[in-house]
Image 1 (tube, rainbow, N blue to C red):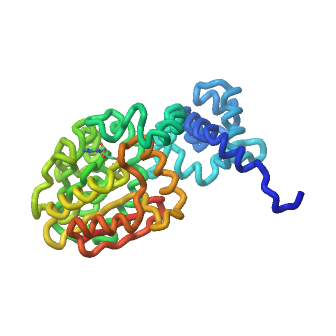
Image 2: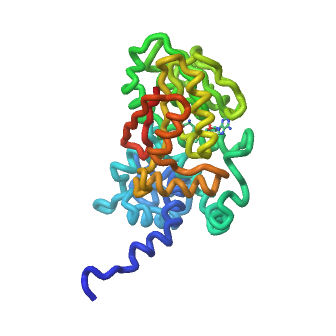
Image 3: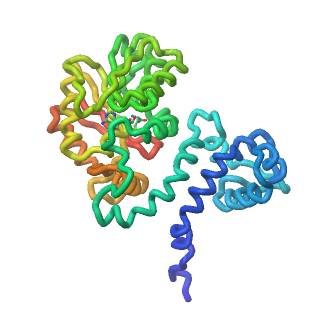
Length: 332
Ligand SMILES: C[S@@+](CC[C@H](N)C(=O)[O-])C[C@H]1O[C@@H](n2cnc3c(N)ncnc32)[C@H](O)[C@@H]1O
């Protein structure tokens, strides 16, 4: 055997990938990262604080050390800087609810061979169902991921200094874009279009940010709701394009172009793949999620966005990478 010969180790890790989802999700659910951050540093102390078994706690700690999320020093456990930044409850970019949200997904993903055969969802469709309670679970859990991206977009648009602007957020979910942007600009106003139960969640989050007086919602399906004409300075379409097929994206971009005032800007945020579908890794793998959950969604190429936005009447399209796996697209 030479050094260059392949070994099965990485493939074993990939095959057992569900261990990672389960261990991170279970640790998040029992607040282990939060208790570690507060100083509990042995299996016994953590088990007591989390009110779970010591055997279970020790097993989770072993798994977390293996995954590089917890380290062992002088007989005591502590979070790595990465776990401390993203897995302790209450952090602005926290991912604990996202980690617990993914636990039941392990069972759902067992349908993937059938979904691949059929070319779309075989049970439990998520995207095409009106008022699907799925979204009320998803949107609070993903809000933190949009925080840095919404701030980057605001800087690019110089939104804080833009004065009395009006904003439309289509499928705004948690309301995180409105919460951040209205916080940065004290005279801006925002309208969010989403399903009624999701808008209730958004009103709560926007109120927590102290800007509810300049926020309004329209309940409904964005495919059939009128967006108005020459009404908005900025429109947002964040993490929507991947659930829609090409025709619907073109139609929604056209409605957004008409809803924007002349010179207004559409901000699209999504997991965008290279034109030859060679990367980046996260957007490529996210296409599986859309195959499972939507009839026509996928992760779309830069060339797709450029062509659809041009067809919809935008003549200036630019892309901006972010530290998150998402790309921002600005269309005027
Ligand atoms: C993946 S979330 C994105 C939320 C938010 N834009 C963000 O980036 O965090 C998709 C959002 O679109 C909403 N949505 C999906 N299909 C919709 C439709 N046909 N009409 C209205 N809202 C819809 C969902 O309720 C959810 O809030």
